[in-house]
Image 1 (cartoon, rainbow, N blue to C red):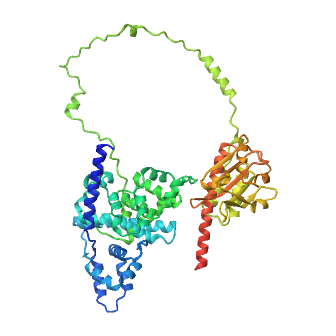
Image 2: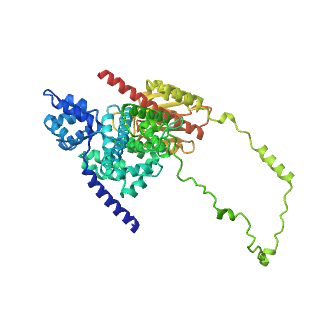
Image 3: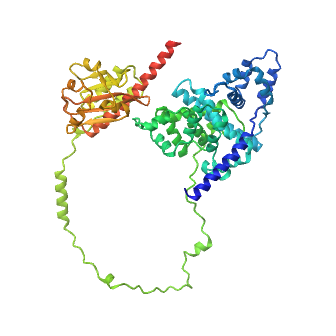
Length: 578
């Protein structure tokens, strides 16, 4: 390690140590209106926790302090306190009353620098928490509240920084609003970044080891990984394949809270910058939904937050949607020409205008012989011969994808999937008429480990053996390899024999030896759960590279349809339970 890198790490460590001590000394305030209502309720002899909960819930900062205080008193260190009713019941009236009386209740004045800095930090964090709640509920219903409080926990560093040093916080935000990098500004003014400070303060927040490890993993993610996640956003007609490492990373708990934390920090500057667009792509990949549906969803959440939280003296996210994008800081600035620069454009008559004699060597004086150009008529004749020899493109060989587009746009995209057979009937028509793949089988993972079971077959003389077939799919066979990692395979006539030995026993004899076949993994919520088989037995169309690419796209469409079908079954199961 170089001496420069060592000195940088030392300065960052000093900055983290200093600011961590400063922030731990800060005691968070609450709104003065909340304090007046609480003191009035506490004077009543019949006051209960439910009455106090209704008042406390309207003040997010006070609610956050109660949850943080309850986390220190919890019995099981492996459980997190991520609910206000749970925290109030754990504290009880005997511990809650002294705590409420010790809190500082302040009437914030935006004209004061310290108060305005805290309101700006509160605005950013509440926007992040609202987005985290909405995104988590959309991804997995029932997880919104926990992601809401985790997002507030991540943003609490900005609250404490605004109270500990309002001038530093104000200077950071002022420079960031002009387009400077937040990382560069924070390193310049603080000696460390707020994200590094958040990672350093994770052990001080009384969170479980599970939550600490996952938050540290998300906050310490590499730029390469974040770029790979953004590339997986669904922008075109077909969703791209998600690599296995990206899929595992997106399944990390509290991903919604961290992504919305970054989103709120960037949208506080502008909604239309490249950083904001990159995070919107990451959220689209996290939700496995089209980017054109995710961006209006995020804008709608910002409007909902702005309507429900009215903070004076700050720019709300809905107002920021109306602001134009910032200008690039790297644009060249044209300087006004000075008198000295103007004088250079005119000839100075007092200067010596004589030219020196140019000396050339003997070799340079030797002229090269001129090349004789070939006759034009001969070149034209040769070009005409080449064009005549090139046959015109055969339109019959082009891949027809009309049925595939209709199937994807009207069935999969519109979520008109009600059963596996209904979905696969449409897919089999695409395979047959668009690609010439006359026969297909869909295998899904069986409950017994290391095997697959046929659930659909089409195009065979007798489809019943395949619909009830159970095959071995351990790692030694080809099916096992396709189930362990998302992939696809095209067994051509010249290399077909190489794959026959890897097929499960009892499968090849039932196929009547097709000349070539294709296989593809079927995904369900980011995990490989099935295999699609197809061949062109007794077909007039030859399988081409374009056909194979369309077959893989169809496998992706079936994967999305399987996800829609699983969501429908979950909703029906919840309704039956209720």
